Image 1 (tube, rainbow, N blue to C red):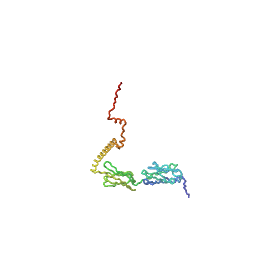
Image 2 (cartoon, one colour; image 1 turned 120 degrees about the horizontal axis):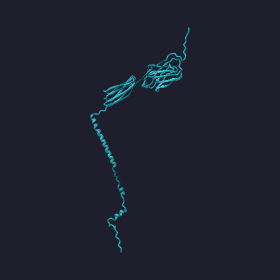
Image 3 (tube, one colour; image 1 turned 45 degrees about the vertical axis):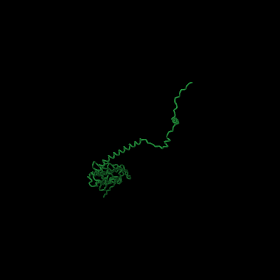
Image 4 (tube, rainbow, N blue to C red; image 1 turned 180 degrees about the vertical axis):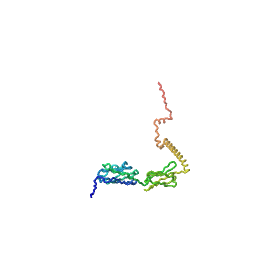
Length: 304
């Protein structure tokens, strides 16, 4: 009896390649999600350079969002690509684990993801998941906009909310609130309340399987009675005319007051001091008044 023994040498293939990923992963908007990926390879040990890759949308040719490279068995996988710095390696590629984490989830992160492993040297030492995994983003409702606007003679209230699944919107308020219309997107819904007629508070409520949200607006329509409207039409123009007249009168009085001379009354003592004194010549002239005037023509002298 001969016993055949199988010896497994390091570096020789022992089984085929395989990649294991879940079909679906769910993450909440604004938080983080973990994308698991493990693999097997046909070697007992690996001492060659190993590259871990994650891509989106389609296998083999999709956009690479994460990539890391490890040179040796005891070396960490150094990140070469991390789109928007959102992707982090959680697993250890040397331990056949390519699990990553995505931080701060947004709506655009809802994609299909494919993980891939590559070994340096042989062109066949590469393997990638064909079906990948689908990342679903969920979110509780959030009202992003609520307004009241007038168009012609009609007044409309508009409410927009987002969430996943897309939330159901309802308006509540005074009776006979008007007609409604709904516009839906992938994760966003807008609902209008048309032809508002009643004064009061109008509330928009958004609900889905993860929660609810509310927002409110207040609507008050101005109503003037016939008599009030008539008084407004009469007194407003009249008030404007009176105001203009007052401005003109005030301006005229101001300019006239500035152009007039001011009269100052002085005490009698100051007036007496201020009178000019008579000169000596004037006194002499006054002293001779009433007496015959001196002749002004001198007679010629007579010769003897």
